[in-house]
Image (cartoon, rainbow, N blue to C red; front, side):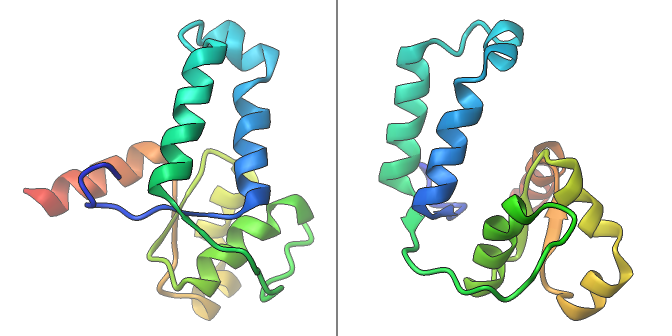
Length: 123
């Protein structure tokens, strides 16, 4: 993001979700480096570098987990190449034949896969 090699798009709801996740006790216990100050720094960085989209249309209904619809719909609205997530429900879309046929451009990948793709493209 900082080198403009990747553009990140968010909504206020997505930023709220990121804040919520980064404050979860289980995550904090597993990653003690996530202090309150570090979380604030990450949020400030995302906010300053990301493109904030205000209006998200409902293009895709995700019955499996309607809370994930905002991520899918944002990716579809901006015509993203990638939706990067650790969320199992979202990652399962990468194997959903109907989703893949309907939205062939959008690749749903986990962060490690995305970093590998980025490294391959940069080399």
